[in-house]
Length: 119
Image (cartoon, rainbow, N blue to C red):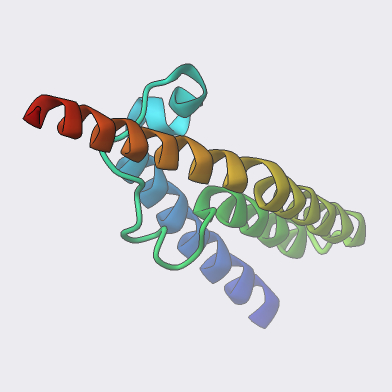
């Protein structure tokens, strides 16, 4: 069936994006390292972060939706959309601004350290 092929293709693409996200972020970047002061040298901007700001949330939502489509579950489709909306709101209002702020703060501290070092 066309719907099974489409759902399988969606799951495959979402899995690649999710695995690429894990690869780019590593263990600490994936599991809240930024909340404990363990930051990457720079904010990750390459694939899959060049496609979307929050590829893990988007790919997870796509995996949920693909499973719901495979099972032909209207409730699953609705729940996948609810999950996507919650992820989107969280990333837009909380995680995105937080990540921007901590990397801006890191850059500011690095510039200040460089200025003091040259004196």
